[in-house]
Amino acid sequence: MKVLVTVKRVVDYNVRIRVKSDGSGVDIDNVKMSMNPFDENSVEEALRMREAGVASEVIVVSVGDAKSQETLRTALAMGADRAIHLNSADTLEPLAIAKLLAKIVEQEDPQVVILGKQAIDDDSNQTGQMLAALLNWPQGTFASKAEFDGDTLTLRRETDAGLETLKLSLPAIITTDLRLNEPRYPKLPDIMKAKRKPIDSIEVDSLGVDTSARLTVLKVDEPPVREAGIKVADAAELVDKLRNEAKVIK
Image (cartoon, rainbow, N blue to C red; front, side, top):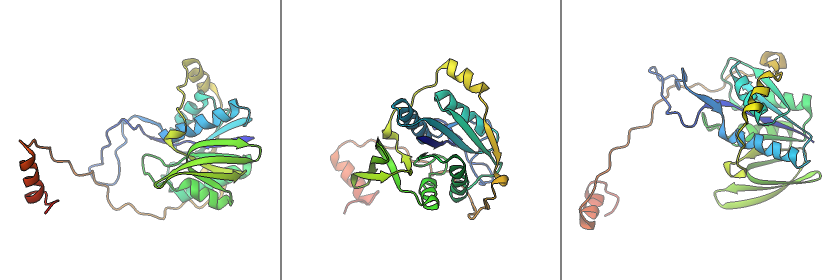
């Protein structure tokens, strides 16, 4: 079984986000970038499938500019077999990325495609679902557990109402939740080896996909600063403030 995993280069989750002075977007100059955390779970799950004998090859793919190859090398250092870079200097929307991934699926013919359920930079949570629709494949989103049995996949997913268990036929799309596994840390020798591994780079324009933007960002604002809390002397003062200042009780 061949497994295709998507990874995205995003601002590291420990970094304090800054908005550009003109409000056109997030300032990423001289900011630490890393692999999207949900994608780390995707890579880890694919590697565990290979170690269990379920998968024979793990291929990672990323869409972005040349710096996205750094993220691909992180996945190679974790243990992925091959990497594909879809080179584009433009910021692409989920539908465009799903269309590009569909082209790669046609070329590579994987039985499973694993994506992070969302990217922490835009939180769109759309690419996996759109890819499943384009391929007409069954999908299991927000996966917290996945078990393979021949040509079927039993998947447990997390919903607002609780846990849901799905049984999917392969080929299928999986999007991962953080609770699915604990991603491994690449070892230094593997990091050094990954730097020498070849990456198959493909120009997005060569795939014949319409990647034109359908949305326009009007303005990006930082969230309002929270006011400092106060201490009250007793319960009576708390009730008074909740009634007369916050007006949350009558």
